[in-house]
Image 1: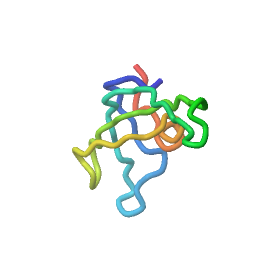
Image 2: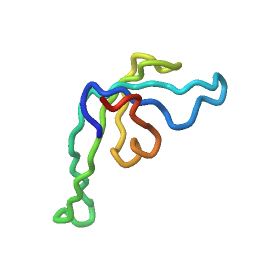
Image 3: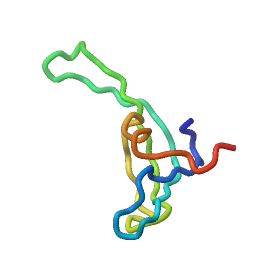
Image 4: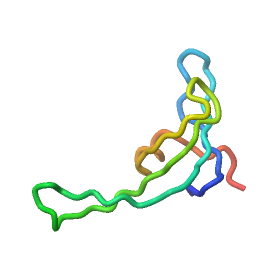
Length: 79
């Protein structure tokens, strides 16, 4: 489950180093996605904001949809 403070690692190791990169969840939120052609049509997209804990992007934050995040990342330990 994606919760603030949890650590995640990439599902696929880095091609150069062979290591899995780590990130920590900062927070989760829901983002409205409004169709410009039809303003009455609104979708709610679950989002994740996280910070890189290792690798070349260490210390930088990134945002991702929960769907894509779950596809690319896995929990380090679920305790």
